[in-house]
Length: 334
Image 1 (tube, rainbow, N blue to C red):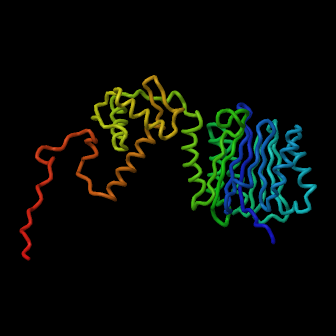
Image 2 (image 1 turned 90 degrees about the horizontal axis):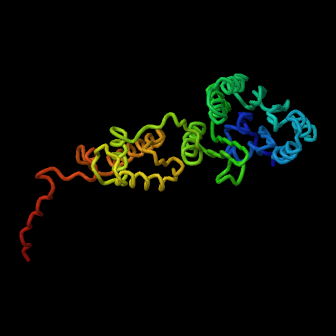
Image 3 (image 1 turned 180 degrees about the vertical axis):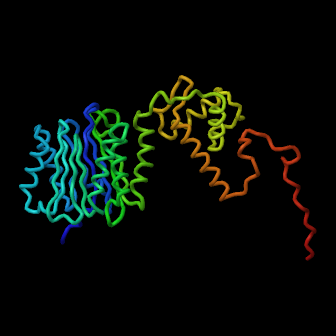
């Protein structure tokens, strides 16, 4: 039985300032994140694709742990592989040097572009503009490694990406002690295994991961919880059933308790503050959830006009707070 080929484009990169290695990948193949990206903090990162050889990940990391240069790792892995002409490989080593290999029998278009601290590679693509656009986007995008990796992925797709279409995508990044609770190096590990637009879905999932697990938001964007901000939070918490008071714009104990419960139930503890300020991402998330809840109710049950604007703590309008008495039916004749 012949193995399926990966029509894939990926980027492997290293951020020296934070000692972070990362890979972003998209493919018209199920669960690409389970096969292509491999990384270990302090050693390096690699992507194995086309007729992917998973031993490249295992053996490649073993070589990288020894301090071997990326070019040496690529050469040793491919020279020992009798099917290398159908393989594609990108490697970034412990010092950020990059190297890549594209076998002569990889399906067109196939190729790679190596830059300072990164390498982009792909096969079964619309053309060389895919990896070229990825490289330019990575080099020119602001932000940290994650922002640049995702920008490269989007740029590759805009140039046509995998010419068979889209199916799955993944983002993997490692740094020393970067995992949950500091117990591993797996700083980010987000995957979309099957989706019509996997890169956009990957960004959506990563946004939630970022809010829940990371601390990348600029403290300069924090806003005081007062006035319209407090009123908006009270309204949205009320729509979602966390708050039952009026929308006064005063951030009192009841408002704080409702917000605390919301934060806990959504696993956003690392976004909770005790200085009277709130992260814009939380404000936006609450607003979107409340809007979705209003839309859901409008589809599933009749809504009294403007009732949601009044909030669950508001009283019924005068004269309208009681249902009319039931109509008395005449006795049935036997």
